[in-house]
Length: 450
Image (cartoon, rainbow, N blue to C red; front, side):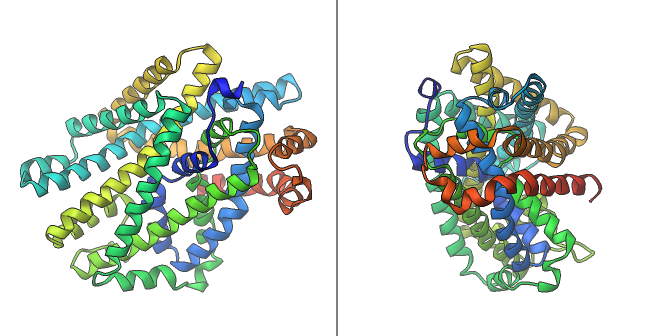
């Protein structure tokens, strides 16, 4: 059954694909600005702890369920349910999950399109095409629709090729390119005047804030959302893992790569902000708070690049190329969630399913663009602030409470025969049963009343 659906051919391929799903725009711009606004290294330390005490256990819940079922989230949650009522609830959770994943992709494609446009504007400036460069960086419906469409086409092209030839093949290319680009940018930015001040902000902890409820909740949310949890992307990738793989190990590798990239992004973005400040670009609001993430990416950093002359054009192209790759590695996992469901539940051929669903998501993106002021923020809030934590809560409930413990152990033994004697098995089952649901509900309550 697994081979007919497709399967990752290697551990490297899976880790690159799953890490690519986890590493998105939020890691590159969201984590660094949250760190800078919440005590620098104090936030970083709390985030690192929470990434392994919340994100890793929740990630393992999705991977184990997916690998056991070798099916989409709807069928997977049905399979581990002992009665018809729980099967129906599980199926509903899976359906809501792929709807939410599709909605996330509908706004994500818009933002990713902006990244491509800003990347190309750097080339236009290099060629002296100032009018084209200005059009590429100016908010407008024609530009937004065009580059949203281009991004959706890239995503469709990768997913239509299947698991090995599409997802795995391109993840194995894009993720090393992302890492190399990130390291090059960090190395360059740290040589610029003002960068050391940003580095101090990032690495010197404000311990008075380390235990503040606001910081801890912010770090909880960053850890949870950074691994692309709650909508079934990791479950569907888990369903493509070979039965011989050691799941706790590969899950740990995915978590480590995701954390590495988020932390490295901090070494890029926060020093770059203070380089901008040194060059006369304002990075604080009138009240002394750090500017918002979208203003940072689309206003402050471009202004910084402008002050750098010819070198700024090269750095701008490289930075927005990095952002475009991060967006693409995430988008392919989001599209795969509804595609896998349609293929397995309704028998459609992959290309038919991909083009149909990709087209529908593009139409949804178009509707958002036509009603940008009223819909863009609403869709983001509905999907990421409210739906994603609740869905992550349900996956933990099914892994911790619904699925029989002996069956879960048998699944883990496939790739690790001695797993019941490891620290993972001594801690994870009760942790995902008792601790993770409470923490995720805390994130959700903070989203409601925070």
